[in-house]
Length: 391
Image (cartoon, rainbow, N blue to C red; front, top):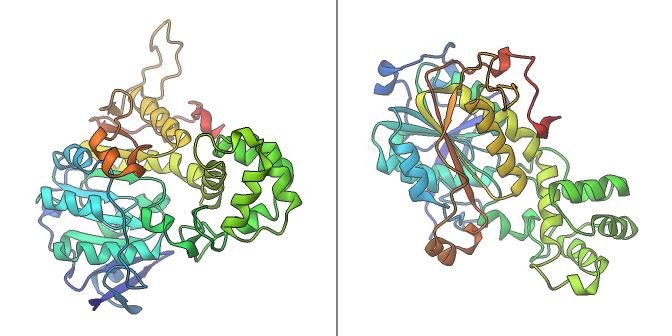
């Protein structure tokens, strides 16, 4: 029999703060008295008092099933974040709460604010983290709002860590109605938040052939992108996942169909990234995450797509160089001051044993950087060109 819990939702603009019944009020945290770099802002009254829309959900997922998601490289993530100064850790993609629970169990000097766009994940994380009481708060929001949400929820607490676990969870992949997988028949949706934005079906049925080809080639690194786009346009309307998967399969040369996994994998990846604006949101959100950290705080990112990993690498490298644009051969003469120190030489990969026990972890790439005791000056230096992915 499923165990039902009651949790409360408080409107915060376009987000909702979700508390488990044990969460209670937040202003009793001892961390506030030890704030290293207090941020400006007054905690809104609606954060203090539970209220608003009351909901009852099954313990883990709305349909009573577990929100299955094995946290990837959890030991490495905890090692990187547990040793940071006491304060708030923001889990920008809390999912089922696996990384969050491991971190809270490992460190009593941190509390955690978890964000997610997916209401199923919010329900699961709320259930999983309720044992930590007031040390865990879960919010339905996109991670590009992280700075504003921290000012609302924890305005005077030091932010000692930010975690991004990008991509899609196993639960999302394995639920046919979400439309993320080419392995199951379902509506071509792919939205992380099913309450906003265009579906994948709306994109593939409305975009021009050349635009589809560019999308497949750029976001999904798809071979035969133009052939696939032409076949999709010719088969419209495309409404289901299996329909799209078959169109992709039979639009490419027969010799390429059985090499390197299912030929639709990268097409689905490209559409998911476009539907959810993943690359567009990530760059500015990484900047915001590094900016809110106190000295010694760390930003940790798990990515599963080469475009994401390049973006993270470039963003960390730019902050570690103080956004210097001086020619490398003459050295820095512009007075740039590094704001971050990169902790990972190259990207860390999951261990062989983890890849064996959890094959979906094999594409994971972990990068981390630590905040230095220097201002985060990129926003105040408009003369500095933006990284390649924003041009």
